[in-house]
Length: 99
Image (cartoon, rainbow, N blue to C red):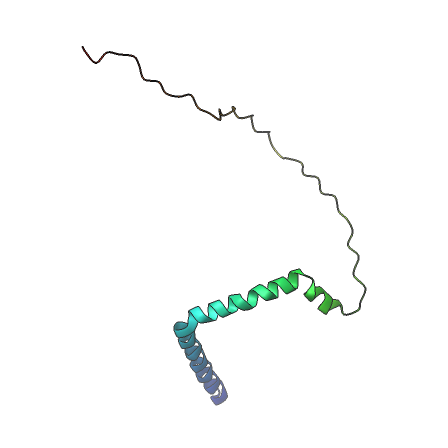
């Protein structure tokens, strides 16, 4: 191995140890910050901001309408027995306690 490769590996190892320590100490705060940045970014992308930025004055590429028909494969499932919305009330048997 060349000397510059060894120095590069040592530098990479120290950088990874630093990042590991930062994540161990501040992982929760980094996660919460990432979520706070992700929500506005997602809203921007879904509202078309990324598309406008990528096209920059170019005409919108045509999108052909497509009809999709779903054909079920296999046997149809047998119809289920109807479920009573109000089950019958349990009535105890008539008997005498004086026996």
